Length: 298
Image (cartoon, rainbow, N blue to C red; front, side, top):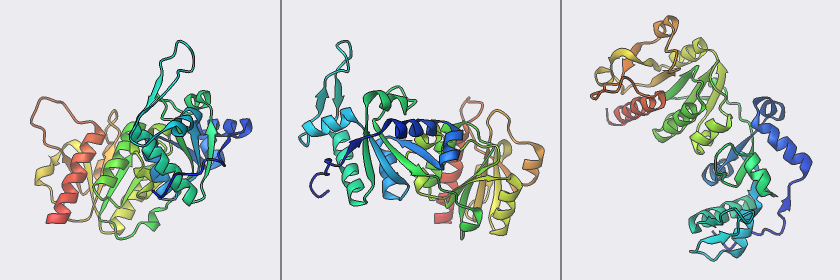
């Protein structure tokens, strides 16, 4: 970090623009604007670094804290009312925000301020992070993914937290892409974006293709197709060192017979305790880790 960011050009967001940003909380609004909202310093940082962000929105209390900050110290701001507790902004949070603003200035990314009230309206978490990025929606196609060795296919995965965690897990274990088939949650859903913690910007996330199309693409690219299901053969007895597309499904519904019929193998994670099953995101983590390890050591 070279010096401090210049905040002289930061202006309050207009009411009209704030209204349009609020509409991004809804799927229809994201589709109409072809944009989505990212919240939190870490995810916003990744959006800035990997070219996804065009505007940052920073809560006024955080900017006020930055004005008072001396590196290595926390800042305590008065509560919004006499009954509200003071807000303590940690030194690490302010250091990360300073770097984020410096990067935005270097990359000529617009920065606007929002009020504390608007801050709460743009986040569905109990405590808003106060930092947001406006991002243009990316629409990678399956045909743009080449030379893949590890891919995660989400077949009608509707829970946004699970979907975002699978994106993050796939990123962590070096997957080449994540595919959301028709019927899956939208990758730009706020909870999916939050759960991905910035990984959404690190690898292609292809959306809206049929399961049959995803399988045909995998086979056309010499990937074996493995479906993760509790009734399959054990993961420990499955060959994993070859290019692989893992299929993860809806926890409540499981897989219909026609999906299972298209797999090269149905595979289960061995369990040694009393739990009946694994959450789909947890199962994905085990399967992707095991495959990435086998591909690198086998």
